[in-house]
Image (cartoon, rainbow over all chains, first blue to last red; front, side, top):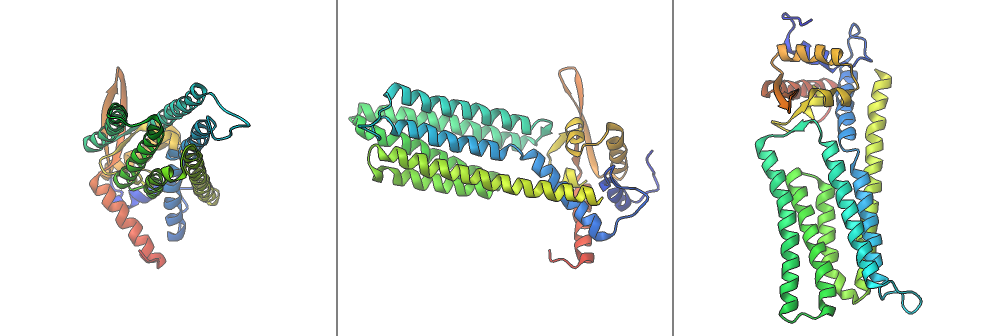
Length: 240
Length: 82
């Protein structure tokens, strides 16, 4: 099938034509440029199709998880959620969303094979999450044994973990050059630092709203961008 | 090539995954890839997952350069700013 006399540039141009395009009808430069751009958009939208889902899931997790912690004392005397129930809701939300994120991430990356350097970066980044989260828990325990009160621990744990998550988002944004991740990271660091100013238990409500609504807004924005990419890609196919 | 150009440098994609993303038949995709392989524009590596052979595809340096040059040329023809 191959044509050994074909020039490389012809090969590149030929290979861009999808089955929807008649090979016998050469495309003009504008149509060819649009076709290639939209094929890139199509791939990008398919590979990143999971992003709005994960982002929305984290937004709901923040709202429900920190909302549950706020309801331990925040809506008294009208309503109070038992502490074990609230902590259970928080842990369950984080666990389910973490599992969903991992599953969707693995699914979207199936069939892709990175370089050794990229694999090392990914592994090191994943390990950093585990090491950092464990160390913050150990540090909290150490501070408690050194005299930190339960009231102070109520501020330490959420702010420390939100701060750490923010730093990790910023690192992810820097490594993989994703501006939304960088912006989300900066926002998380900022709200982690500001949360204790709201006092107990309203710092939980602040984290639920400032974190949850920010992730939901980010999910909506990424969904809009994804739909635009898909519309552009399918528009090209129709034109082809 | 446009699809492969979305991969990072040194990143590759399995044949079935590329076929799924491009919504092409295996035969059609093979024909396209053979032309690109003849021009040394793609690197094709064979690997095994258990006993199943998997073909991975990525743009070669020559292919990436040719694609970027081609896009630049199109932009020039179309009078676009880079």
